[in-house]
Image (cartoon, rainbow over all chains, first blue to last red; front, side):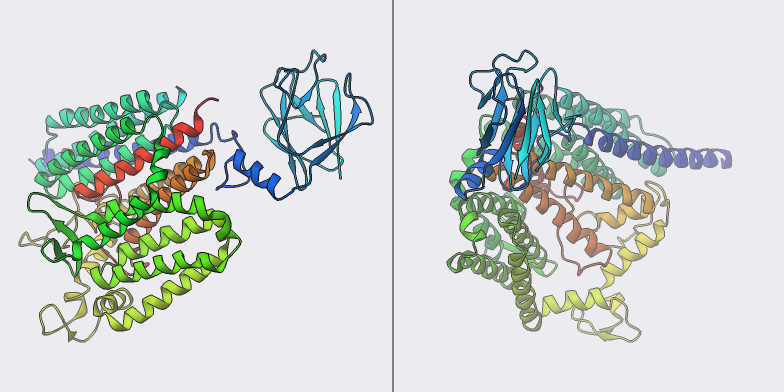
Length: 160
Length: 433
């Protein structure tokens, strides 16, 4: 009888430990999966959706971002482009900044949004990538005044 | 579909956790593992797989962690309740099934667009106030433990407060979405609603004696106001008003005073007047009996706990040591049997739920969805804090349920509806466009 009781006690201890181990494994599993996909949709406001933020920005007259063309096959060097609203750069006819003949540019290549400090650049899943100061974008990044954005053969410098 | 696969795997883990817990409980009670454990574990998993299939059909892009986290929380609840009273455990299992049905119903109903809810915002606002005041109507309400929280309709009894919370969040999400800009500019005329809601919160305290739900609903309001306007000043003003009002009420209402006294001085060396019996008694034997016994229960758990099914909840003569153990005090039962390690794990699971919920709010694409997700998540977090903090004597104790864990049908069903809304917002935010 004593041996049986001892057995039960040991099993209970094993049960308790197994439960706690499983529980913490579960927590670890959720934490690990939580960090996946976190990079998508970085946003500056918890309240405003992307579209609403832009509407407000336009309404309150946020100064457009000014981009100086340093090099390009088709944009004209030395020209300054003003980006007042989020603008898609690509070969597509619907692109706000169209780079029709650059074969290294995807149809919808990148998005540029004006910000008080410069321009927010996000790669839209392009084949050849979007670069800020030579670094390939992994996620949306703020390009400050003086930074150079490269898309295909086109280089744009953020102006004050 | 990646999120759905993660969800299914998480549910299998949750089912395993529930089965091991139940097996340990039956082993501790009968000195053998009941063969029914396999059946119950399979039923538990099967129930959540049904929920999983419904989500696959209606919200395929929704967050994949929320449902497994919920499953683990309900597993904690149902096994602890079963351990305390097998009959109640069975009833809680039925309530969880009803909750999953409510989840499926909400998902199916709003699978196309839940944002139609925004156009009914004023209806939800009126509904929230009506639900909160319902228990105080003569003939309908029932007084339990000094507060009027229950509605007795003869056939069924329910706690409208849980549903009121969701109605309030839906109202605030719609209302603040509309008035956000003028509020953010701080126009004086928009302070009106703020004062009206403050008044309503105070009214609820006076009429129902229900401090917990007043604190919860007012907290939700302030948090959503802050999320909508980004102005900390509103929160400071709101808190000042609430504390000021509470101070006045403290002097006017005995129930509020009792709660604070119990919180600050649960033990006395000399007998004090006991309002329950009308005689002199040590406070730990009278007003703060429940809290003190719960603190002993938590202390008894120590670091590793007594083990599932092996805690002490009854005195030598078999009577229950802690009243309301299955509902308000379930956390102290868990803390005794699983110790600090287990209690911390429970809080971690709650925290992860909140992290996922806030992430849904961040990802959502329009103001209503963002406010809705943030409000639902904050309400969930604050409710957990109020009751766990109360049980641990961090804040004054007010009777409120621990979401998904406490015994009770209304609470379980309401929280499953909350989960369904979060999943819908998350699904919409992640839809490929």
